[in-house]
Image 1 (cartoon, rainbow, N blue to C red):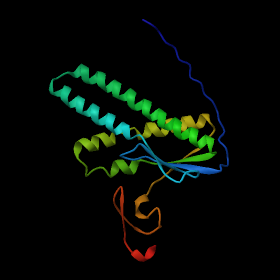
Image 2 (cartoon, rainbow, N blue to C red; image 1 turned 180 degrees about the vertical axis):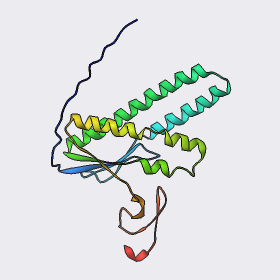
Image 3 (cartoon, rainbow, N blue to C red; image 1 turned 45 degrees about the vertical axis):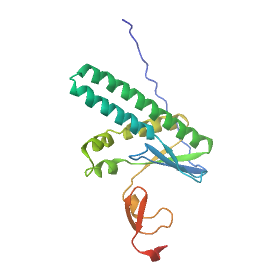
Image 4 (cartoon, helix red, strand yellow; image 1 turned 90 degrees about the vertical axis):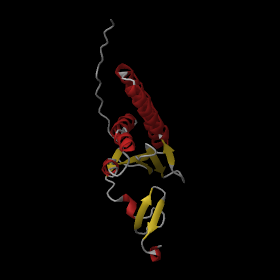
Length: 187
């Protein structure tokens, strides 16, 4: 049997006070991270594969549960966790490197509203969404940004979908891609 010892290293880092732009990241159901940056015209969608990994392992657990193979279920849960962790690390690393290259502050949304609003969803989908690793993603993003001396600002996303991001009009978001303007004169 091998014995491993680990040393915990603490490092104090002072984040910069000013940046030339920002990289805003929103965590969501379909993609773990959707980011928009000062230097880009289009959003970047990352982490869709994590949803597929979760669905696949959910399906496997169900099939193995029907056959009462509890040890196999535990093994695949460990593998699922490692695969998801790897993807989260890759996404966080990519975002921090981009922010570092373009001297940008990282702004990330708080995903708590997403979990509260998932009550009306199908039970299986609700479980997959509520088990999404949002907290872990934000923690990885923070520690990777800390290494590069980049500040991560967490923002409360209170009612983010009541105003059109393009026109600023008040309205209601019917689903992720559809925004219904309440008054057409507001454009």
